[in-house]
Length: 78
Picture (cartoon, rainbow, N blue to C red):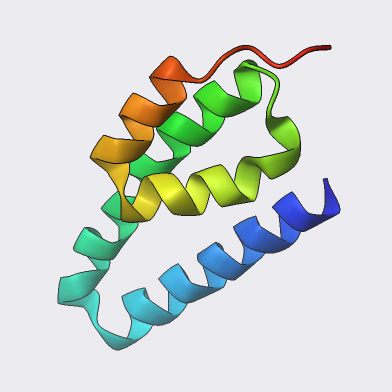
């Protein structure tokens, strides 16, 4: 939980810097973390919640591949 909070705060700080420095680019930069949340949430729902930040970064950088990967990912043992 602590690492997830740190990751969310870091991404929020980067977005704030982009919005202040380059307002034209900010709208494009905001879209990638939002898209990255989708595979991260699906992975969390399937039982891989301890790696939420990793899935979020993976989904933000390689969204199409992350969507396929999280779709074929087996359910974690609980």
